[in-house]
Image 1 (cartoon, helix red, strand yellow):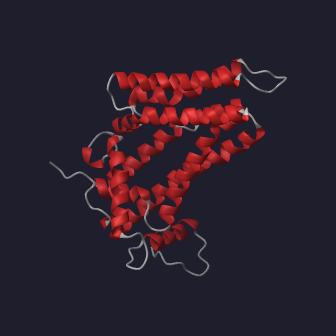
Image 2: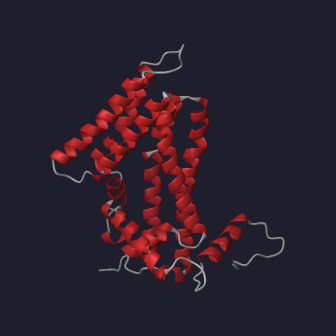
Image 3: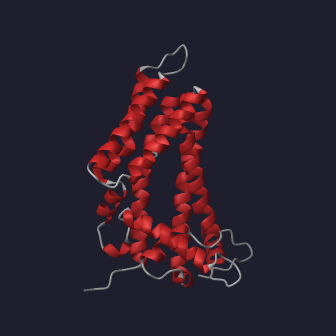
Length: 265
């Protein structure tokens, strides 16, 4: 099937595929400089490797997804502070003021994140993710306490989703999808994947899928923020967190493994 657009051809999939070829095709005149792309690929690939997302490892999909979520400890560290905030807010909610006990809810949530961080430090385990989560939780709490609005504690999350979503979208549209840069580093081929039409397409669509995930969170959650519905906002943040992250990690892993099949022993 030809990828060139034909007069009267209204097939959206064919049009999108042609767009993917157009933006991802190798070019000597456009695109990121090799040194920049290699540095970015090394940074992304290193982060993916530390998260257990190395296609060269030969791990099962289930193992990879579990490792990416951090196992039981990572899941608890990611979910429990939000659950504690939501429960405390709901239990102390006053229908007259349409607000819960903000100080108590935030204090319990940030306190729990601090406990997780201290435990990792005492056990001399990698605490970078826990420390990052603690800083983010503290910043969100500080902002919310400053404004006196519980919904403002979700603003840092909105900013994070906006930045990540924009990065994935723009990288795909300019022909240097972030997924491809990371995988190229992990598989030791740098940016050579850009000469392979199949890989370009897969990395293009995977990057768009990740951009769509971050955009979906914003589309669903922002109206609740403006409505001041903290309970619904907190619930949907949890629902649209790991439950959506894990399947997309699995899809990404399977797609990349299909592109780089293991050599028979």
